[in-house]
Image (cartoon, rainbow, N blue to C red):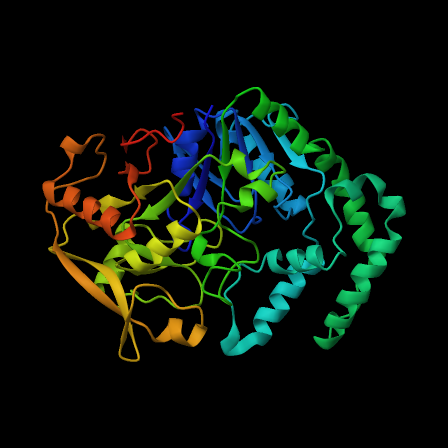
Length: 429
């Protein structure tokens, strides 16, 4: 059977939660393969609203949900999120939820370091969520991470703590902070260990069994391609690779398992935090997009910056991630605009570019080149077929897929699961 990998093709916040929820109801397993609890997914199922930031979206439908080794795990947040969902009637147990035992842990020291750095950075602030994601990934590649499997061997943790403290105590001293309290940290880990270990194991084995059985696997990405640590608007990026290829390394399955790559694309553009944003609108139009789109971060509650659709950035994201087809979301936010604009290129120092440059100064200085189209006065909200859409809205969709050189696989017209126009089924063989 076909597998599907879902990634955000902009700066995140494209509405992946609804699409992943819709696909998860037809999948046999859902896998988170990167990021941490800095990723917010909002699911609307009937009259219930579920807000997830770490758990795979499939957990709401009872689908086998796995946190892969590419994720950095805050065990205390995990416990709080599980308890919250259980309070909403969601069943979570070792049968339908598993954590890779080689996942690195986010420790309290990581959260503290994240906050200290941002506070001291001044104009160089990245705009992180302050949840310790970056420092945890640094410890992973620095070979000093404490991992999920270490929770079963806390009595033998001293050598790893030596490595952690050798690095972090020097940094903390530079910020005028005391050394890590090793005993307090060990006590916190001893307290949380039983909760985490009930779900922990070699998830690559479990996923291989699912794969060999011919079942459908849904790989759930977090953030967006423009926040990828290699391919995004560096340094204003997240600390992991958000592109589709990470699904292989972050889950323990080979690259052939990723299947149909579905890029989630908002009908306009938003971004949270600092960094370049060529089509940003700091006027009444930007305000209108934000208000109509309820543009506030699921995790942080921060107001999102809003602007017109940027076809250059989205085309680049789709190419880098090998996107097979896109899911266009929040089309209804554009209802009622007399005119709508699409960025088709940039001007930089007198030259026209059809790509987004790598250097931060160039990214900050590009000027968008717009193509203007007539808007539509009818509503697209809740549409479930092309016949339900105004003619000009269909023209807008067609123009988007032409410019980004990637076909539209489905169109989402509201947060409700069923308000979706299906053009091509990502799960089809």
